[in-house]
Image (cartoon, one colour):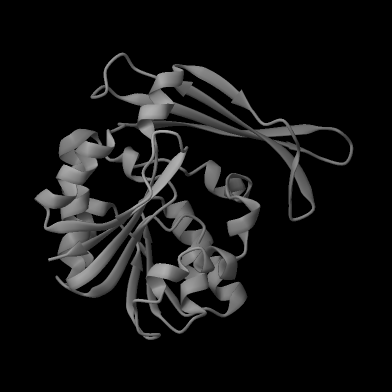
Length: 251
């Protein structure tokens, strides 16, 4: 998985207000975190700019943050330093996790932020899930969030333009998504994301990136989790909702 090098510098505009603060992001997983001791070993393997990892570390957990994007890892390390959070940051693709960590190292693995669709096709997705499963301890849990791709594909190729300015760190921007929906599920799809910053003088600075993705149906994900030794405990999947969360336990 590659990408997010340009968007890393403006990624805060892609995070909802409710999850921008590290403590709030971590609190959104209170129900699953309640299953862990306060000093649990936790991996966030799609860490982005580090809000979740830093929020977990603030609770006393031993946290490793990993991402395939060097820029994202750097931003996570910067946030951890700024807030005094003891987070270890590692640049690693999902497939490479077993090269960095021993088997059965972590009590919980997070793969959130709608990231799994960047794994290349079904084989890439299974390889990613297998790596996550390997580094989980027996009885440990994978927490995964996903777009509802059945819903996304039903809408076809399109342009989604934010209807309001979003303020981050005293700066305003509009977020634009351009969706390229391929004819078949198994084909490579694309999402182009642009963040158009507007300064006080009215000038506009645009940062954009074209990202590859390979969508999947929910039943495919369920089968793939089962294939790598994970059993779904809870799921919020609904064809009517934009996103869902799955918690799967390693047996």
